[in-house]
Image (cartoon, rainbow, N blue to C red; front, top):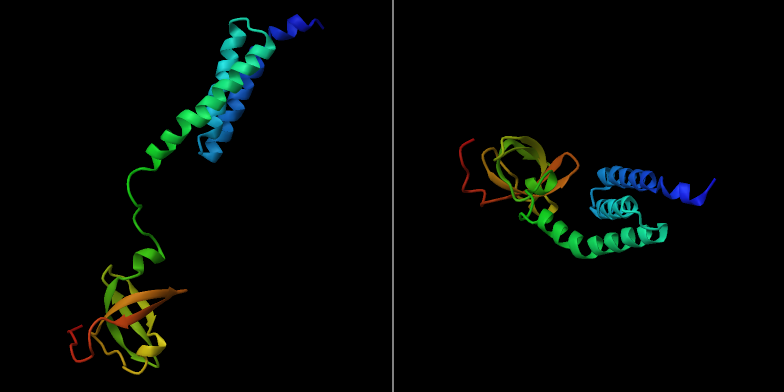
Length: 162
């Protein structure tokens, strides 16, 4: 097979490389393979304009490197801008207030949190001395599995109605 004939089909190689990099980018979502895919399009264009194989590779490599170091960082920064994401799961429960729904016996009971959820709760060891009664205001200080660790928000004499 004549080597000049192979060069006529180089555009197919560049097209396949571009598609492979785009598919990888879909799974990584890091913009790295997208920049390399765009560099491959540069190699494809060089091929279509009749450049030699070594020139096609240089065009693709230089374009990919430029995109990776010049375009990608500001794009990532712009995509990640938008402030802190809302807390979720355990982070959203920490600091949440609630009220005791069943009297704490041996440091364990139930609380209804301000988000409407009812949780099995326990008091930390230092709070075990003062029992929590129905209606006491509490705050979540930790989550241990499916149990909220709560501390009294006010003194036991300042009870609220359930």
